[in-house]
Image 1 (cartoon, rainbow, N blue to C red):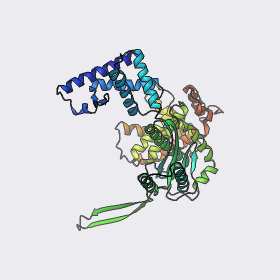
Image 2 (cartoon, rainbow, N blue to C red):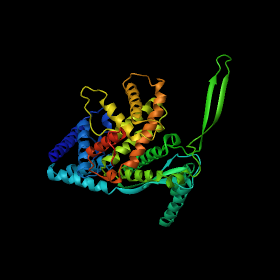
Image 3 (cartoon, one colour):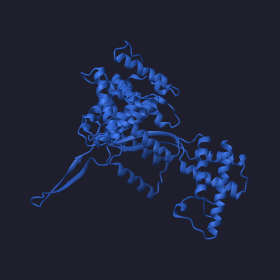
Image 4 (spheres, one colour):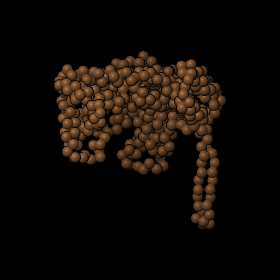
Length: 460
């Protein structure tokens, strides 16, 4: 079935190319949208237009090559499409091969082999902002490391030594280019070092940025939102940023102008990285490192790791968000992703999902929030859930006065629940590619029964 579809798409592509070429030679011009739907023609013949139908067929063939060749997670789609177009033109226009099962399959296979030749194993150094004060030692979450400025400088020195040894006669233009890159990064105090193996360079960069952000998500879970809300991957290279404001006194008509400087980054105690790595948080960092492997290797399919990565992403986005209403939505969404194990049927009870999520969050956080029993936690979170629902369904304004209080509580529940999952869920479960959702659901049910007093053992 797939082979027949590929053959049909190849014919659609070249019929469209022939039609567009004939129209072009007759002086017929397409709209602007069609200008960019092209493939490289045979040598010395320039670009060939594909039209809408040919362009869509080319996209389907590209997708087929990537999935049949098992490179969809590692390849850059645009690069693969260019390679496929060039190979198809050579085979079916220049060499005039028949469009049949054998030749189309060979063309797709050659596309995959050519795309793989461009794959590289790269280590990315992504500037970020953690704290305003420098630290001598960074910290690692598995293979991802937050480099302190001192560590980053040592890495750069080693890279320069290796570059000089490999290319002692580096051209002046290349040296100037290298120095500009170093000069640009001089103002940053933190970097994320992310190794990505065997991917197209453009895809590797996207994977590295996502993995770096996920590492920051877990860092913010572990050390807490209140200690990390000014941390960001989207950093700026200076410790301070200039501020200014202008107001007019409508009574006197005079302007009031103020200028100043705002400190960027989080203010944490000296030696905070060492304290965390030597304290009880070390286990959570280790667990997060194992989970982050699912970000570094795009072919890994580990359901529980993905679940926690998603929940941590919603949490991290909420911490870095400045709008109380959207922060509340993201916090509650994080907890839904953490606790919902299957599509629930309401069966005439519209609050069934709210009750289920509230029970599971109460079970995960009871004992961590002072002076709140399981029942009190469940009732408190259900109120948060209701406020979130009113927000997203238009029942209340984002400026409703109950939103800020709900955000504070939602942050605590989210932080404690994800943190407890990091500590309580077994490492082998995070690494299991075949973990059934039923086992996670059973774990939640046993935990709820234990925390609510219905049984005496939460299990593991």
